[in-house]
Image 1 (cartoon, one colour):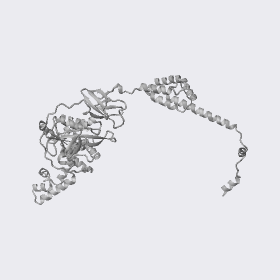
Image 2 (cartoon, rainbow, N blue to C red):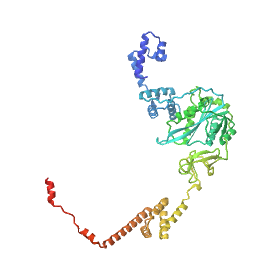
Image 3 (spheres, rainbow, N blue to C red):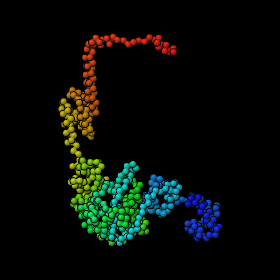
Image 4 (cartoon, one colour):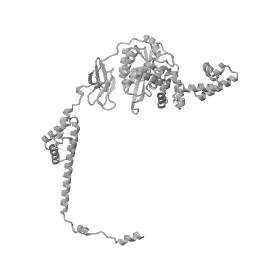
Length: 524
């Protein structure tokens, strides 16, 4: 309560009191609680002023986060109080020492004090009856643009969300590329492992990763998903477009994940993002009271999981059908669970380069995304931060360098001298030999044999074994040769007799103006 509102309330209390209203009537008219009314009912103006003063100087539990909260509000005006509370819980690594409702009031006052209104995007929902325990889960996908740590670069993330319709217990998985059917199947396996069971049916939107076509109610699934559904034995219900009765819960979950977890969160890497999301699920999405059911999903789930069909061991296959898709990095490696695994040179063909990876016991089998040809096989590293590099994937540099030296040697008139010269450069500049050879090759372009020989002999004679020295020397000799030719042309020109007309021109003299003319100009 600010001072202005406080004074107004105090005046109204005394006005109504003088008019003969009792305490219950005054509390109802002013919409305040009886304890609040009792606190101020008998105070005079000076006493009430002291109370307001003490309230303004009183330390609030959320004050220690004041600067952080204010910065978050200024940077993200649309942020919710629940998300800020979640961030504080995350940083405090537990309960911050005050309730979420306390923070809501604190943020409400901050917004008012600093004039930071919250932007709202209203949506309309319909009530949906909950199915029995263990009967249904809903599945949907979404996408969200987020910023990397530099606050400039954006990355588009894709998510698939699962929610048990009765308990509202949720599982979410994120990807940094568009999902394939294999990704969807693998995510189902992870969700069933997380739920510790399988429901009777799953409700989906009409997504092309699962549904090939809908022919007047006859569903034709993609091959991979059809095979998987039969293995796991659950019914599928495809909801129609704009059908809130059948997919309302999952749309709420996707929006909740995007706007409460992902919004304004900095992306470091996908592994940490999914790790933080699991913590967020435990802490907030499954750990807080649900707004509709008024129950904590995790507590209801302890009962509902007893109604789920038991999940057998994760489905494994020797084919790449259930592989996970990974993006190839510029250095022709793929990051898997904190380690890097090499693929053949040339696998990276730009930002949209992907491979499929299948985990087979203690090995990763890596396949080409399009042809499904096997590219590599690596033993799974148990620690983190390591590089597994197949020797066959290393560039065969020595063979390529030898060919380049042979090619450049043939450009010199004296091949033997040139070979020794290049061998010495290779010895002294081994790390940069390819760049050195390319500079020499460029310097030899359009040079005659004599200039090349002179430059080579000068470099060997003065022990100058670097490409830049050779380039400068051959450039000097080339310029000197051109200058010498130009001098010869001038000498020949001096010996050519001029004709009579030319001699007359040489005898001609320019007109000379008398100085008196200039004097008159100055005098005027």
